[in-house]
Length: 113
Ligand code: AMP
Image 1 (cartoon, rainbow, N blue to C red):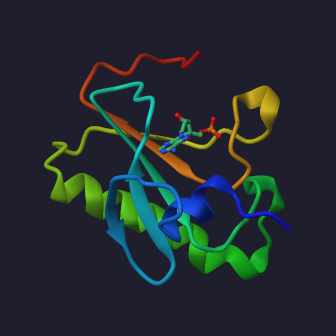
Image 2 (image 1 turned 90 degrees about the horizontal axis):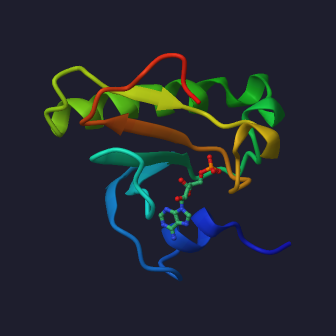
């Protein structure tokens, strides 16, 4: 099976700005930022979308949230950010390797589009 875009990034086959990496996850800058800070928090395990995750993935899913908080703190985002998961093409998902979007640095309206 062919690698996902994010696997190619973490395997350094495609260049990207990798801001953080640990055993389970990594964080990159989104190539098409929708806010002054737009990061992607990505598990190394390929889970195509959130609705494909199972009980076995509980630790990974929690880990991604904790990494998001840690990175936001390190970047001094003033505890003001939004996490987004697009699940499925109709919800805007374009890369089928689960990821959290972390957006910050501008007013984030509600409801989102
Ligand atoms: P989604 O549409 O929720 O699947 O999010 C995929 C995200 O990946 C989009 O926001 C894209 O801008 C971003 N993206 C696509 N290619 C790259 C890349 N080479 N490096 C960093 N981000 C990327």
